[in-house]
Length: 505
Image 1 (cartoon, rainbow, N blue to C red):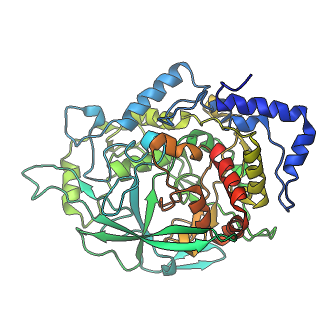
Image 2: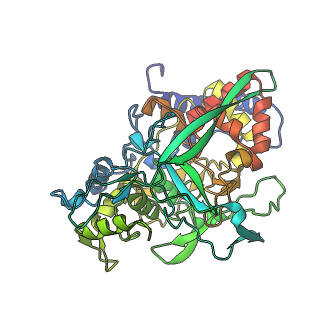
Image 3: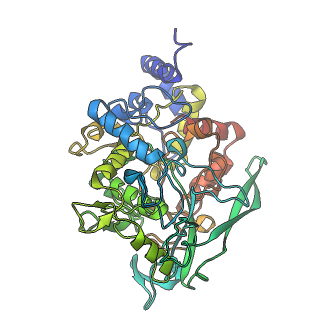
């Protein structure tokens, strides 16, 4: 009866079958003994984005509005998408709504970093791609820490005095009689890998790729001694509006900085500035939870990656030593006077809001084949290993969230959005607000199994070093070391079942 129906509906039918025969559920979920037991599979897990789950799988793209999006919202979604997709150009130009690129930048469009709403192309050795950005920040050992409160060592800046907080390798080709030359890109990235070999407990060999990063062609001299660099591979963006809609109290209920419950997990939320309110809030976006809201994340990406100023980030990223960059910024014609800031910016509040709306309303792919026997076994291993301690399976979004289609949704993102110590092997040794050099935000897991079929590649972790989900797990350390060790002790079939579950959610 259901052979020719999509996997989403096959899974729904199987869940009904399991409900009809509860003894089968007991048999499946009592597979193995552990302190962590998998809860019963719920119908809602099939639609991880609630009513914002996409109705049908889109094989070539994650970019599609959630099922609940209708009418004017859908129009705003696709209009915002056009500004996400199309390249920006240098100012002044005849394309007034899309100029303002640079003077220094990483890329000309958002989609070049977030291919199909996912992760952009990972650069090969010897190549440079905009989806892998080099951020700069204070090295761990140049700050004093007491009771988890970071204190900046005296006389040091949080960013590099010559390069700021991000390497921008490109400059616009701007010719003007008042300029001695066009603004120069800051530096290029030289990427290489070293093989790291290991074995599972059953004797199966594996090999990981340890990346090495070096800056070359540095236009403004060396980095300051107290500044380190940290690679950031552009993350998936679908479902971001639902993550924005999770209640702060529900997140903070998971915080356990001192591991008071002694489970080995010390969830910590980054305390960051909310630029719109001027208050300190908890971070939930970017790879170290630098930004508290989706709008702030979008604004930062516009300014830092493309060089498009906006009402949240109204100034160019030129440092004091980048004189040509500053002169170029002054010569470019200011486009828009924002209502919120008495300074010229390069994207109006109206257009900026449309891009934010596009990001908010991106739907989440439906789960696939969750009721298959192998996937159910993998689900059991997920909980037995304790993965859910950081990858929190579900939330109910805020019923009062201002975007109605995102409010009061039961969602399954598998993240706590908190910072966790991931060990020395994944450390960048760079501070970002309250996050230290070994801490990273837990990434959502929904939809990751579709990356290869959607973008023709799959890369995982903050710098894209892992070519597979298995490799990503093997890199886990610190608070996740116990789960990683349990993964290596699984049999080959058990590992395959776990990966099948992670690819299904």
